[in-house]
Length: 455
Image 1 (tube, helix red, strand yellow):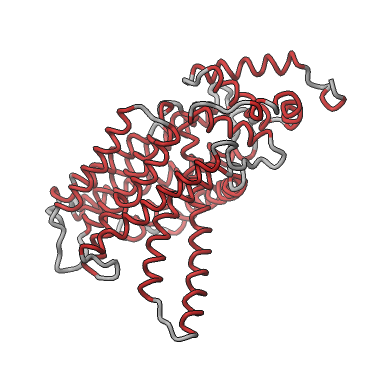
Image 2 (cartoon, one colour; image 1 turned 45 degrees about the vertical axis):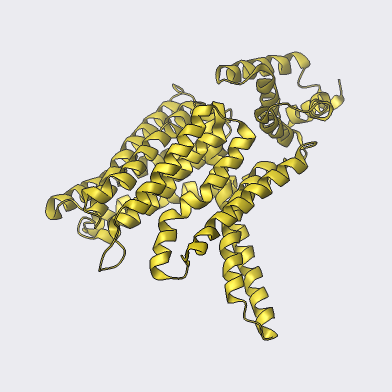
């Protein structure tokens, strides 16, 4: 054994691998898949193991090609943790095929968002813009779901669910008589926003495939979502600069490419949804460090901010009940708190020791729970004063869900610090709410408009 590996023996590594493989096997992975992921996880968690594993297992991914898409995806994770820089290049053998398939789905998304123009619906028109707002998700996200399905080969029932949800929401959003002389109806705005949440969560079924019950895989979708946002924002900023420079160059020589640039911007933004997902999956590790860093920075910052707010609120003598904008702001903050807790769990290694980051996450959960209680009482008081409305009902429903989520998270963080529960239980609890979020979003999309008379 090499000098640098004397502190870890093959027997010790074998025992650790065996424990990890058994754990992954219980989560539903095959023996081969479990072994690949176990090597990757151990190598990621310990630099010494990484060096040892690179020396002893590097040939696993060079000599044979995984047969299933799940094995390919999991082997990429293992390769990422063994690579010196933690970044996975395009897959060997299937790399070019992946690019072409991804490109086809990206083009499908770009074409889909422009098809309504053939029927006289222009994005810049006010009334037609409402059509695009209602249908943006069902025009673009099916391509992303299709690409995930091609990679993961999910069970047949997933295809049925995807087709049913996309089909039903398309019918609902285009058959409901949204109209108002005072502008866009509130129920339409709520439906559009909650539809995007619902569809993104449903697309997650295609991403998870047969592992949709696994908390660690659901946590992977959280991680993917955060990294996707980071990449998409960067691509959008770069695309905006490119289009601006292109417009300036053509205008300088007497051409005014307004229509062409609008086509390029809308089609490019739609296609980038799939391209961004491909970048996140293929170059695993390149952006995860950035997203993890953001979680490590903003988790303690939000914890401190909420603690200071809870101290300042009684000292100010002010009440948040009478101000609708303030209530909406605090619900956005609560949503960010839950999102940070989710992404903090995705950024943390399951086998990591308890530390300051866990303490900050626990304080954030507790401060978020206290803020949630105050906000929930305020919104119930507002409902008692002014009655039920689409906004107040939607906010009250979200508050109730977040209240349960944060209360359970606080209890589990306390148990974690008392060494009574593992961190995996926190991940399981938080990701188990995906179905609840999707169900509530579906209620707002389907039931709210007719209940509140499409107002």
